[in-house]
Length: 163
Image (cartoon, rainbow, N blue to C red; front, side, top):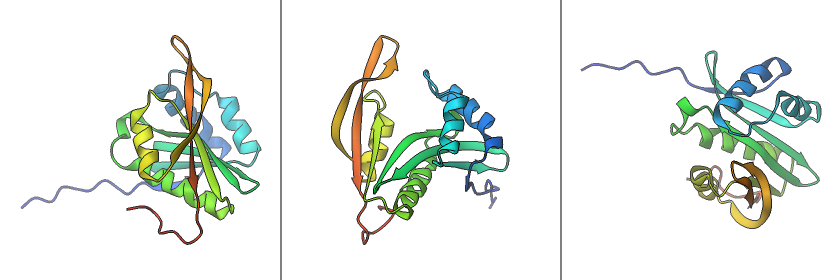
């Protein structure tokens, strides 16, 4: 019987300015209309939560969360293409929801493209539900694409994370 070597566990950590070039590299490789380095810098400067999921020196993904006034907003969640479909988005999203609770948010919001069914399925599996639409919110090849606005009620005593 052969035992295959398991890859080292991925770890979560808060990002720093020095991490932003790696974040932008993943962002640009995964999105047709990526955020800029300046946008990520602004997020850190504003005190937003920017968390990385990494294994050794390999950035698997990242997420950005803002929280204030009893609400949280997932601004960006990205897993590098070569690391997708391995449960990393679930782990990162669970951490960001924990952070929203830590900030005493009662509700968490996000926008997602209708053309991104994998992301929609992920958010639905965590209990997010559609609460509205933003017409023409995202840039697209053929002009603009709507955003589906989703929300998650963050009850204090609910079982977490969902099974």
